[in-house]
Image (cartoon, rainbow, N blue to C red):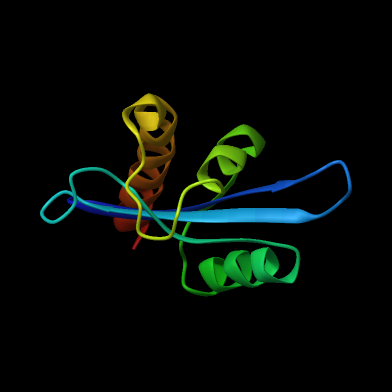
Length: 102
């Protein structure tokens, strides 16, 4: 599979939801990039749209904090490769499972 999309989310101590969406297409992108981010109602909309369109959502408070600091369409820095690789592995395994079930 050449690409993946996912959304990371968290609920902070103040009960404000935060979310960040990433996308990776190895044919076009040097690294995964942030495609959406937000907090509160924006985060809830990001997560809702992800679920509505079958984009995997994973709760990862530490990662969403870091991704939220990046600009939209900014590629993730090398120090985040390992964390994002775990998310992409999660996404690819879900996609494989769906393909075998369908």
